[in-house]
Amino acid sequence: MISSSQFRIYYEDTDVGGIVYHANYLKFCERARSDHFFNQGTSSQRGENHFVITAMDAKFKAPAKLGDLITVTVAVKSISKASFVLHQEVLRGDTLLFEMNGTFVLTNTQGKVIRLGEEDLKVFKA
Image 1: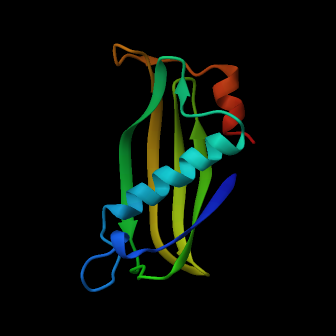
Image 2: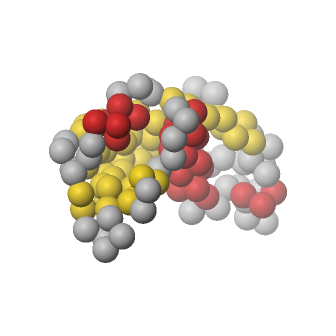
C-alpha cells in the first residue's frame, strides 16, 4: 500500500435503505487516488495532459452503510513505460467491502497515450 484515505458514509452516498449505492465505490476510489496526488503536492493533471482509466476490474464483497467509516487504500500493482495498474480496496475496519484493479495512462490534449516521465513514476513509488 502506498496510501490510504478515510471517509464517512453520508446519506447522499446511500440508497433509501441506507446502503451505499454501487457507483459510489468508484467515487471513493477516485477520491483516494486524488488524495494520493495531493498529499505529494501534485495532482493527476500534468499541464494539459492528464491520467485516465482505460480498464477496470471491480468486485463487490459486502455493503457499506450509512454512518460507516471506511478506509480506501491505493497500491501499485505494476508500472510500465506508458501505464500503471493500481489495486484499491474499500474497508470497514478489517472487512473488505470492495476491491478494484484499474489501468491508467497519461494522455495529451488529443487523447493520445504518452510515455510516463520520471516525475510521474515517483508519484507511485512513494
